[in-house]
Each structure stands twice: as structure tokens, then as C-alpha cells.
Image (cartoon, rainbow, N blue to C red; front, side, top):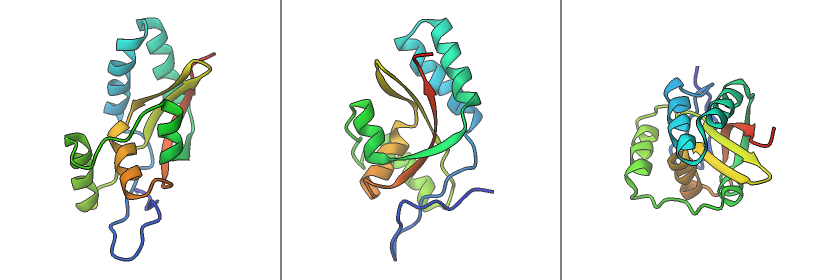
Length: 134
């Protein structure tokens, strides 16, 4: 059952609902992204670590700062797609983040992080976090 973890939804705002676990296709998306930046062995290790990681949460602004990214605008097609899901009452999948001494990457979920940031920069986002240094 999806949890109703809203990003401090106030009166009149539609809360952002989150799935209890990461959707299977998001691991494939993380693999596709990471394989552009890393060799295949490292990519597979990191995706395996993401699968085994426990769900936690971090604030949208902290995820973006750690990754060195600016949020996508609300009219970005990926953000719009996720916004429509939120309006329809559908739960979003938690985000996949890889971090380490060399920096942090949003392996999957950049548009979901951007959407939450645009609604509430301090909103909590469920995620799985894998250490790239091990």
C-alpha cells in the first residue's frame, strides 16, 4: 500500500504519495545511466548495492546539492509526467542515489526530485542510497 508521505502538503495542495519500494524498471534505468559513466562491472556492483539498500529519506534540496544539480523546471517533460501522476493520485517510486568521496549521482529519479523541490525544497523524498566507495 503506497504511503502518503507528503512534502509538507498544505491545505489545497495535492500530497505527493510514494510507493513502499522502488519499481523494478527504475533499477534498469539506473543501470542505463550509470553504464554511461562507469564500466559495466562497477555499474553492476552499484545497482546490486542499490537493490540491497534499505529505504531511507533525504530532503530534496540536500539531494540536489550533494549531486551538484539544479532542479529541472516545472515545464520539463519528465517533471510534467510525474506531476500528472501526482495529480491523478498515483504513487511515485523512491529515488536511487549513489554517493561517495568522488561525489553523488541521482542514478534514477532526477525528475521526481525536481518536482518535489519545486513544490517544497525541503520536502522529504524516499530513496535508496548506495556507497560507491566500497
